[in-house]
Amino acid sequence: MAFMEWDNSYYTGVDIFDEEHKKLVAIINDLNAAQEAGCEKTELEFICARLVEYTALHFRHEEMYFAQCDYPEAEEHKGFHDALKAAVFAFRDRVQLENCPSVAEELAQFLRRWYHVHILVEDAKYARHLKEHAHLYARRPEL
Image (cartoon, rainbow, N blue to C red; front, top):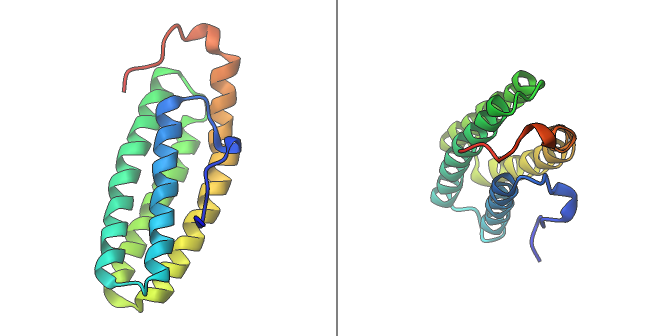
């Protein structure tokens, strides 16, 4: 059984974002699997590297979309992105210095909480904005 599963409550209506969000669920599940397998340091380093890459790409996509669609809460949303990126970097650095199982457990719980709150609350806001203003956007912005 997966640690975390995608369900329709996370659906934003923007296909690329929904697909990218599913990739984050996969990373979280890979982290959980690594924990269950004994949490090798190299595996946790690899997962942290994937998170760094994921956040850079996904957040760039969202922020480009916000700019092209004049999303009024773009700056606040970017602040949430910046906070998550900083946390991911901090976890990545802790892997080098601390006990792998404890860092992995904290990271898994942090990501799961962040995912639920960010997708269900913050990403739901831009999804609502896009639906309410769909008549203004003849096509999806290019990413």
